[in-house]
Length: 166
Image (cartoon, rainbow, N blue to C red):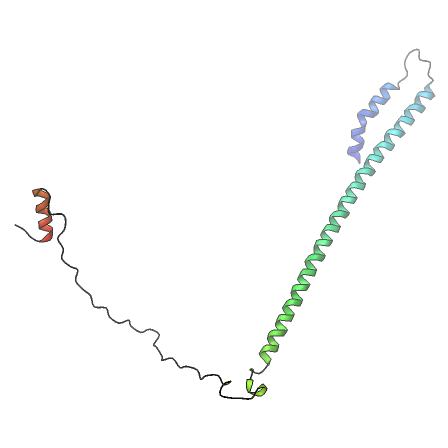
């Protein structure tokens, strides 16, 4: 509030300068003081109206933000409640299923050879860490290295690699 009054100080100084009595004026001192008072009242009412307008918009902004936050909270709470209800239903179904005895078709339908399930096939037991069958290693085939039609130096290196020293 004090900062706002300090902002009005130059305007008030200007008004005092305008309404200061001068030499040879035909306006009385009381008329100048009355017009100065009316001008001050008008400036003050404009200032108060501006502050009221500013505070009103701030109030509207805060209310809208609060309403937005409340709506968001209600939506999140409704979603959480719905998810909690869904989880409760799923748990209820799970425990109902776990609490029931296994399904026995013999109680509901007559047993015949056609309706009897086949006996389960028993697989032979295989050790977990069984050694794989050994693979017979073969020697690599001996093939000559390089092409036979080359110069003599190169051919001697190829022959040496092939083990055919001459």
